[in-house]
Length: 315
Image 1 (spheres, one colour):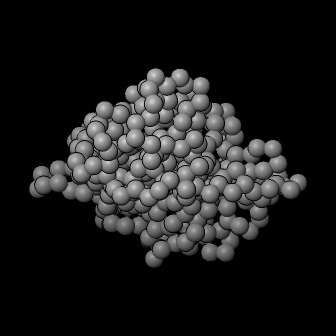
Image 2 (image 1 turned 90 degrees about the vertical axis):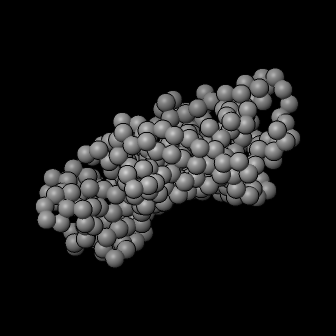
Image 3 (image 1 turned 180 degrees about the horizontal axis):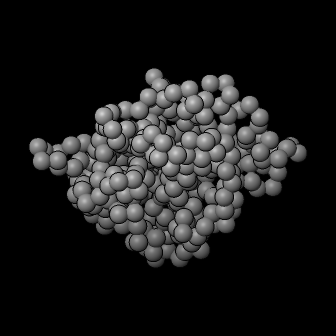
């Protein structure tokens, strides 16, 4: 092959993992993103440069560095999902871009369940003895580390004697801070936190934030029959974070839209010396559907309690 990004789409068919059926038989947003990731891996494998060969032959780690998805319809357990991956037009120093579409057949034809964009970088892995030089078709997408991507810009923040909480979640900011240790099972290539680890962190920090504000997932399910719905999500890596480092994750609700959804952002940092390094950022749009009673199937409308919980005392 002479080029990685060609005009031949890749089609990947699979069922969402049973793990994702957390509420009734609906699949959570994390598993939409995991299916999209698997489809991109298939794209590389079909061109003879799968993740295993990239690692052992060229000393490269296939790294998803940016994943942005819209979820116009639900997936359920046992659905057979067809994901199509198409190469995009690359920009210098920003990795290999792809567009992704996901459909499921509901009997009257395919229904769109995901549209998104994914970007891949090939990161040089330390302490791996490559057996062949990197071929020209891969060279434009190779970087020594994630922070060397042209759009990464992980500018460090000086602590200057302040503690992490004071800097990242000061009083009145409506920011929620959660610090966690990177486990080995969120990593790959023996040391680096992978993109899906950040997706898991986004899912968990939302859960922790809602519990902290008195409107946990369980509370709204029991009291109101509200089911959480994610319509958009994005996670972008800015720099490498490594196994057993502590990640300081900040979650902040930005806005409530028409009292039926809210937008929020996630930012992740690791402390090295007297500085915080911004390693990832993300956004999510979240709402609720009503699961029981006469209003079942409709969109839930936030009341003052929920609005205040999301936006803090300034709501």
